[in-house]
Length: 378
Image 1 (cartoon, rainbow, N blue to C red):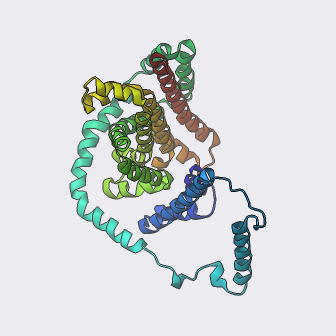
Image 2 (cartoon, rainbow, N blue to C red; image 1 turned 135 degrees about the vertical axis):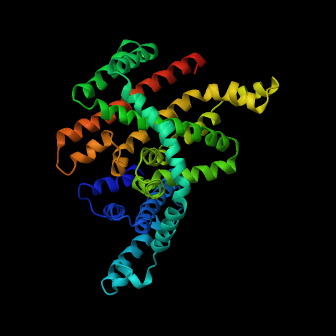
Image 3 (cartoon, rainbow, N blue to C red; image 1 turned 90 degrees about the vertical axis):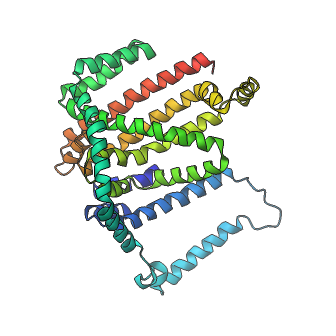
C-alpha cells in the first residue's frame, strides 16, 4: 500500500508510469485524467491487498494421492505462455486498442468546473471565516511564541512523561532546527499539523465509535478508509484547489482527508478491545450507554486513542511535502524548493525537521500511553 502511495513522489525524480502521468495531469489541472490515473493506482493496491489477505487466511490443502499437484498454478502458467505467444501475432492481446477503451475523465472535468463555478460563491465566505477566525489566530500564536518558551514547555512535558532523557529529546532535535535557521518554517509546520490533528480527532473518534458499535457500519467505514489510504495523496489536492483555491484551509483539508483514517481505525480498535467482563459489570451497575462509553470504555481505550493520534500526526507530516504544491510556507515548501536546484543540504535539513516533529510526538504519546497502561494494570 505505502509503496503504491509513493509512485507519484518517485515521479518527481524521474520515475515513469502512472505516477508520472498523474503528476503531469495535476500540473495541467486535468482533473478527469488525474482521477482516472489515481483510480488505476488504487485498484492495483486493492487487488494486491485482497490477494495478500486471502493468501494469509488460506488453509494449507493436503494433496490426495493421484491428484495433479498445484493444478491451478499449472493452468495459470499455461495461460500465461499462451497469451505471450498469441500476443506476437495479435497486438490487441498485448495492448488493448484505444477504440476499445472508454474514458470518464471528460464528465469529471465538466462536473468539477460546474462545482467550482456554481458553489464558489457559497464556499468563499465559509473559507474566509474559518481562515480568519480560526486558522490565522493559531498560526500567529505559533509564530509569536518565543523559542525558549516552546523548548522549555516541551522539556517540562517530557520530564513529567518520561524523565530526563525524554526532556532532553525535543530540546536537542528542535534546537537543531533553531540553530540552522528553520524555526519559522518549523512552527508553521506545527501549526498545520496541529490544526489537522485536532480536526481528525473531532471527526475520527465519533466515526470510530459508531463503527465499533455496528458491524454493518464498520464494513462501510473500513472500505472508505481502505480507499482513502490507497488513493494517491496528490489527488486530495484537486477538490480543495477547485473549491477553496490556494489557502491555509486548503492545506489543512488536503491533510485531513489522509490523516483522519488512523484516528477512525484506532478508535474502533480501542473500543473493541475493552474487556467484555468490564462492560458487563458496568451494565450490571445500571449505567446508561452514554455513561458506559464516557466513564468505562473510553478511559480503557484511551491508550489506543493516543496511538491513533500518533499515527494521525505521522500521516499529516507525510502530507506536508505534498501540500507544498499548493502554496504552503512550511518545511514542505523548503523541500519543494530544494528539488529543482538539487539543493541537497536545504532539502535534507527540512526533511529532518519534519522527522524531528514526528519523533518528538511519537516519544511523548508513546510514553503517555505506557503510563496509562501501567496505571490500568495492562
